[in-house]
Image 1 (cartoon, helix red, strand yellow):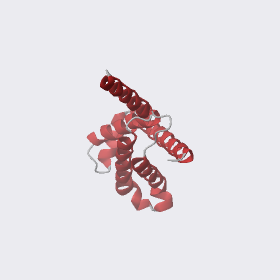
Image 2: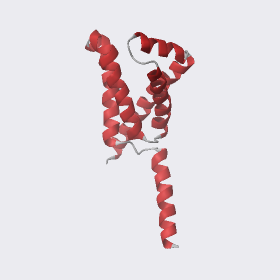
Image 3: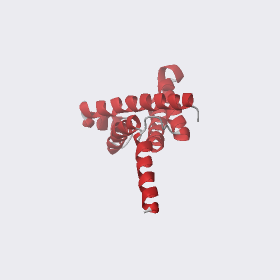
Image 4: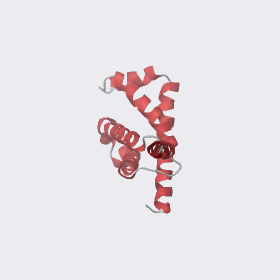
Amino acid sequence: MSNRMEVGNFLLRIMLGAVFLANGLSKFQQGIGNTVGWFESIGIPGFLAYAVAGIELIGGIALILGLGTRIASILMGIIMLGDIFTVKFPDGFLNGYVYDLVLLVIAAHLTLNGSRLYSLGRWLRKGSENEQSLSKTA
């Protein structure tokens, strides 16, 4: 993969992570009970607010660090699909789900391509590969 492609993937990973981290943090700072109540008011089980906020917060951090990029991106894509179809779709494209659709496409891109540049996961894999190769030669 070219360096330019890796830089692009890195920028998308950091941006998606920052957006989801900020949203997850906001849900907890403003009181997760408010989010639970809002979920229930639109017909979604309230306990899912904890799952969504947790995925946003932890997944955002994971993306920024480059840990489990594909898994975090899949989970964030699922959240975006849920948001589009349960909340935003009736408001139409421009006034409703356009932003969510952009986040969904970024999540899909990272799911398909990953992002290795400045990735803690890549660094950890290299360390375990070095340990394995050392133990095989010993």
